[in-house]
Length: 386
Image (cartoon, rainbow, N blue to C red):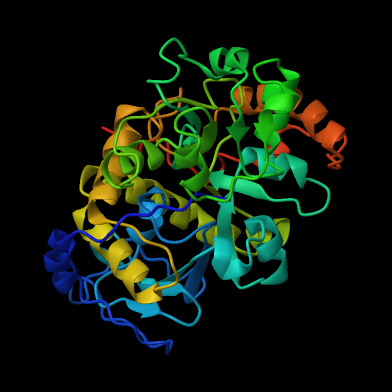
């Protein structure tokens, strides 16, 4: 579950939106090729006519690599909360369509893994290592590409109130209340590891900044490094000052987040497609990070047309991309490839996470290994970031 951003739409984005050519049709018509008909990577011979991808929240820059796949002439479906159009790679059409669906409120806040089991039309959806481990019996999934190398999830606090706090563990020593979305497994880990105490954490966070502001700096809360630090300093009128934070990754909860994965049935059915499609996703993340303007305008267009209470600005999207690079959230894996999984890291995570999940009542597959939750089978090792 994500966060709510109370920010507005920057007027500069409107100029870019006009060039993107989106419309708000709810019909499933075919969008025009992005480049007048030139075909790059041909997916039509091995992939479904429309590849459906499920996200975990409303459109935002963290999902930019998926929206990067959508060519000009796209449609914004305001009933299904989805964007569809030609699937393009490096500016050229691939011969198939792509549909990127919103998650979070659009799917009743269900886990993406659960949604994929309910709707077999979804070829791939956002999975995280921790979700795949915790659902390894009930809703098993396997991730095929990791556009994010580090999870953007953070714990944040007011540096003016806590000038000596540099880490989550330091924060724990102050006894400050820490709000988070109830059910987040990383919080159980932080408690078990002694970084926070059970009596100081509060699972009532609802995504609103109201409680953080009302506490006047005394309380801490969860957030995303790509979101809250910018919005609290620049957009939330009752705060408008910096916040400090630490990534939960750096505190030891090293799961991959917002990777693309599928059910065993989907991966088996689409194996030949994935050989071509996964490298296209790798390239999409590389290209988005290098030049995000067109795709960020598409994201803002979708947000405005959905009009479902989610507010997101062009300035926020631009800042998020800068933060992705600055904090190395998007970066090459230790093997030098963009999008591959570090299997040793996942093995270590499983060892750390399994006792946490068993304590909270999740049923973890007996003898689970990294190969049960991720694969580098479809990764093109020649694709790198920079």
